[in-house]
Image (cartoon, rainbow, N blue to C red; front, side, top):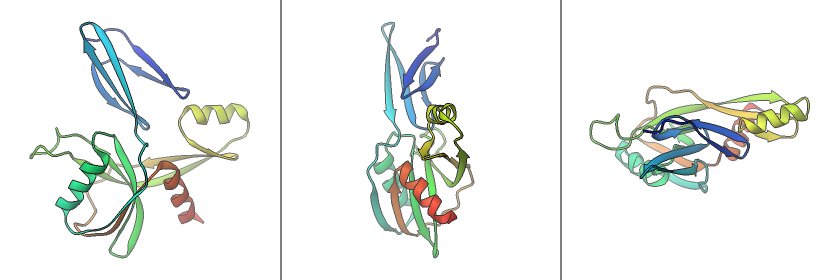
Length: 176
């Protein structure tokens, strides 16, 4: 068992790991593997996806297959989803297989909210950058995706996977 704390510094973000296994954070998926008393640390960027439009999805099973194929082992993905003449941005969180009865990956559907912070000086800018927020000019943007019960219908008119920056742009356009 991993007894000491492993510290990884990535793009000014410090991640503390005190367990053997995987942890999931907002932007990174970190896996610590013990092999013959050596520790192999694998860091995956959660948002290295390319934009992908899926168009119409006709069933929950079809959506499940698309999410499994696109997200795979990543922690999740942002998407713009249209259903019943309503469009919104969603975070699909990969919760793994331990929660599903049939052994498939369970994906939470979480609507996105955008929080905006004013940057007053360079100290604030460095702080928000270290927190992993999207910075544009004198504003820092954070996307929060609150966990909800599944709410998407089986039939989805359009699903487009987007990057975090595109999600910020979408949420800003909805507020203007």
